[in-house]
Image 1 (cartoon, rainbow, N blue to C red):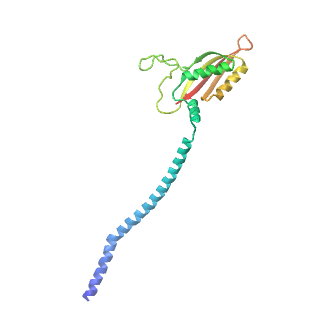
Image 2 (image 1 turned 90 degrees about the vertical axis):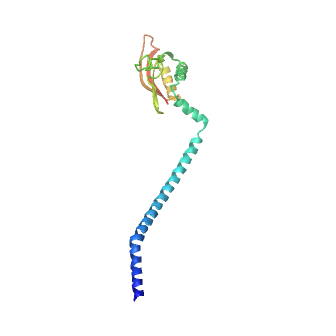
Image 3 (image 1 turned 90 degrees about the horizontal axis):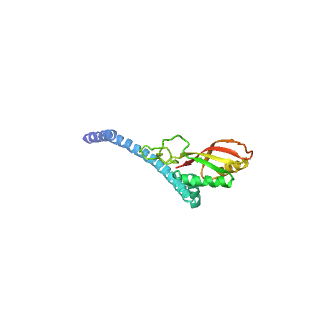
Length: 190
């Protein structure tokens, strides 16, 4: 009988030990297994993202130097007003237009900057912050025929540098063949 009692006590103790100690450990084990499964899914997702990143890097690296130069011409770093003026003058001459005036500061801006230093005529009013795309307004006064104006606008459209023509106004003076044309446009830079 004492053996039977000891066996019952041991079985009862094992059941109590299993209930109070092993059951929480089993729940912890199941929770860890679920976490492991979730981490496996996240790892697979990261692998897919890494493959996408590598494919995009290969695509970016496959862009030729010539195309990168064209992108820099379309959206230059900084205003590059001198290059822009030269290209406008060249396009006007090729279109048989007389370039009368280019107004690079079409917005009313003070002649002195915030630091008390004089501001050049074509300089932007404020220095942009961040790496976004900025607008550079320009006013162009030209003189010529209607056909030359169409050719000039076609050249502006085909130019690598992005130029948006916002407004065109023209007046015909006493000569019937020549128009006085005012164009309000804007170009962009980084």
